[in-house]
Image 1: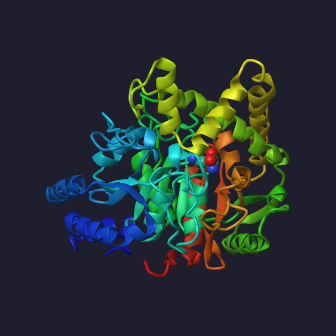
Image 2: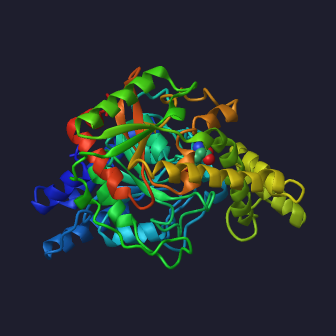
Image 3: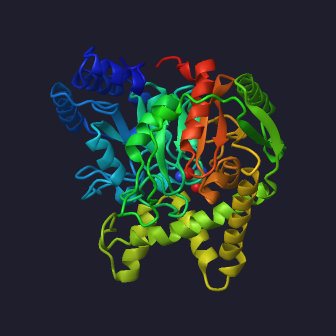
Length: 483
Ligand code: GLN
């Protein structure tokens, strides 16, 4: 049962081949058996899952249908879930039970999904390896000595290991696409504003965006359909109609103009990945796509700009965790300053503290213009590069990451080495554009992803291209040994 995709599950449930309750029990048993190797869950929600599964079965029995009705999923542990621990991977929120559901959680529950649990993640979504979680590192099912990518590493490892068909995730600088690449999944970061951020614990509010992680583009379409839409509770949510993503999958790629930026193939890219990306380009050409070389000249400035803007916003967002209102509070504070200092010092891990300090520095009176304002100007240049590229092409294609998943611990002593791995993903967040990563092959037994970027609100185009590619390739069907 565990090999089924969301689309297959929907058909099986509709044809009464099995019930959501049976499927849910089977997956919970599989998680209990296999997750100790991976550490992909922070909390399991067995009781909730079984009651949601029974309710979904009852809705189907009374004639209701829907692609997500009875579908088991899990939520990254930064989506607030009412009455259930929502830890954000941090000691700070270890005992935090959210008083309400995030919009994404509520929408998916209304569509009939079954929540199996909350997935592990880098603390406050900061990281590219899922090693900064208070609950321990997540392992990559393709090689347990390697990282699964971050920050949505728990969602990725669980889906890749067939513990469940799909999960929610968030992407501030690559945290959906990069773990998708490292674990042989398909992951979509929607246009900024497409999916509500209400109840999604903030890292960097102008960059954060929720989206689906699944094995196929077809399944990403199904899950995104349940997540997307206007939300008056999120002032950056955009009031645009949500298209039928599944209906967009089957368009022809004849004449599709694919831009390949020359800057993506410079030094730093593993040549074996470069070759796999060239192969994926050839596949799209066979399907009728026309390839054009393009240039994104400001890409080289994106990492420094991102690593000023994201920490600046984080330092502001995380100031609410002060030991007074909620979250971790130190024992026996001597006075208010002691309360703040020790609560924050004990509650936040090293990477989060580093970013708060960098961000507070960049925002401070004497340095604001030199760092934060400058970074915002670079952000505009990055966006302008994309706007002129999209005058010439329909999508942009390149690698998702410069290297495959590294060994656990390999970059722990050098945070900047880890930041550099985000080179291909963060530009989409700076510009607010949608991006997708899909499986493109393997290097040393480790998965490699190809990234597609599209103009604003063209998620359907990304899913269409990925689906057509997946109809003609089988990388996405490969399963890690032992799972
Ligand atoms: N690796 C990036 C960072 O650490 C992106 C993380 C994310 O997308 N949440 O900020």
